[in-house]
Image (cartoon, rainbow, N blue to C red; front, side, top):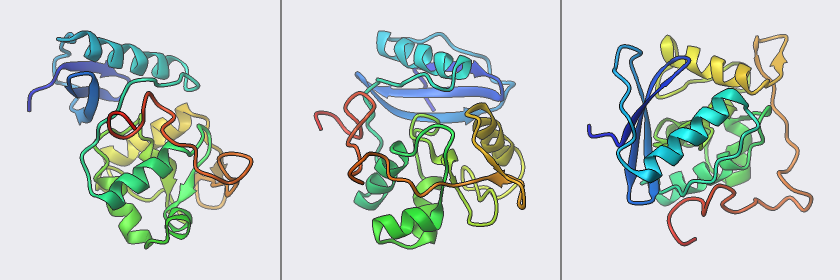
Length: 188
């Protein structure tokens, strides 16, 4: 895989993939991978914004996103963009909101090409942490736990995972469109 940057983060290395001035992917790489300086101004901006997030979970992202996916996946990813920091939603909650199935929501979460910025880590199981990066255990869930702790997501005392809120993302219950630099795809 060709990366425009490899960024060292607290739990490993992130491989940054860009197409022009749009972010197309973030891959979790082993901590043993050697960091790589950004090869473009846009990739440098992505790295700077990610580092700000790792220093302060309230940092906002403003880079343009261009994740490749099906219309259903795009809808799920847009819904994830509207989950505020420090909150989570269950697969079932997103399924009900999007008139889908919880398993289809989980599959779209696992297919998310831009994790962290499109916060699939904020989607959890009804009675547990759920999966992350198509894994139900191991290092992937450790990264999900780290991200949720970093964002100070509330822990549900009975299951030891994050709690979830059903409050709408804005006052009229509408999904806010494309909060991060043009959202999903260019020119939207």
